[in-house]
Length: 227
Image: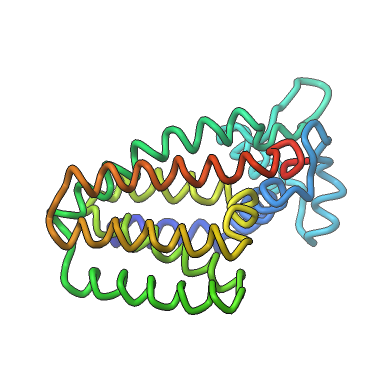
């Protein structure tokens, strides 16, 4: 992500409209607001201590992201993330994460490789201790390091958004010792392929890693996770 993009994102996030938007998006993705629930401008404005204008603007932006459906003369209703959305995201992510790992074999630095290897070591430690909050945080960090290493701000932006959209189901996906350790071992193999500059192997392993995650999530029943 370029310096301009980072600055724009920071400015947007801390503007009044940006703060309202990020809060509402987080509430929708976390499940606070359920599918088909109405977003009432007055109630939200009162809760957040703002006027209706930034709430209205935030809701319009959420509509552009496909999280809200605005019905003329009726109101704004939560679309949220459906089971099909989650499956679609993981299939698309599998291809894009593969591409990310492939490009990383060309652009990654020694410092980034070192950070990835340190991440794997820490993840293994916390997985064995069943510290799943730390495991999730380290998993997020691993993928962000990989996105940065791809050398593509566009790929980084798209994958970061996808990563955020499925955060609710991802918490479930690594909340067992078996999957947490297996996921970390998959990370290790990806990094080994990247260090060896084996772009085909890195791409294949990253693709497989995401599909394994989806398969593991499906065991829990997406309808139960998404409510």
